[in-house]
Image (tube, rainbow, N blue to C red; front, side, top):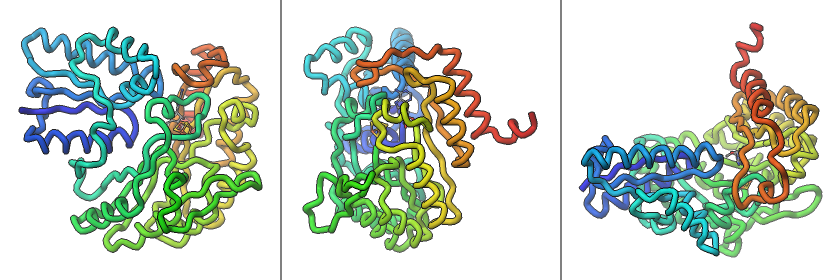
Length: 371
Ligand code: 5AD
Ligand code: SF4
């Protein structure tokens, strides 16, 4: 029997797929390079934007065409689409997906894959290591708290043991993965490691264990490079900055999503910082880690975003000097607060223009200079 996995979305999904693969191998399946050689095709879905969801429908349609040509594989859908449907209490969403995708044989919640299987990794030197799953932040545009549920941290010792094992097997690069790696441990603070209480806007926020976890991984012999995705600006403690600064094996390329450079939009997004606080944070990072390079995520065309508010984002980007940005056009997602209370009122043509402007500014700087 052979399996084939198609993965959409983020590093967390890639890491989940490595565990799904291990699960199949454990049951005696072999990997099929081509879909048409498979007995089971697993689609690990992403729901972050409507375009990602549409790609799943497109793939299932194409697969069902292959099936009518006498290929006999089973289609299993897992990942964020199923996560969202099984968490939706009325059952209506699961019923809707089943109706839209009658060709699917099984909707499998990713939790049933779990962390029990040692992952079948895609690379011999670079490993993805999930440290938490889910998110408690409820940014108003984001579907992740609904697809993956509340944040659950993996046990500290289990992560360290996995990293030590990786080092022993010759891995030199580790990427720590979670929706908010820097709030890691908020749910497991009574396990003996002293937590760091992150200060935000002069108040103590949540306790986290991320600085300690990172520091411990830095000490593992053989691990030459450690990076992490993704962090948020409001749990980025001074302790974490210090750990990065004093450990040269932590990557100097840091991803710090800003989403918008306008205070009113940030508030509407339920992002817990102002543009000035973000600018101050990156100034602190640059002063303590002098070779740092920053990348970011930005959403353009959030409900009600005016030209002036967009220009505030442009201005922040110029000040920050990001070396890379993942720029998204706002996509209205079911269940989110933005979907419930705001109208998706920025015309698509405007969203596209704003997207291209930032894309050229940050990701194609040579092109902009030549013009
Ligand atoms: N529309 C557009 N982009 C989104 N993102 C998350 N939700 C949405 C949405 N509804 C982007 C954010 C986030 C990245 C993973 O995807 O920029 O940081
Ligand atoms: Fe989504 Fe915000 Fe959580 Fe990131 S922090 S996963 S953008 S809700």
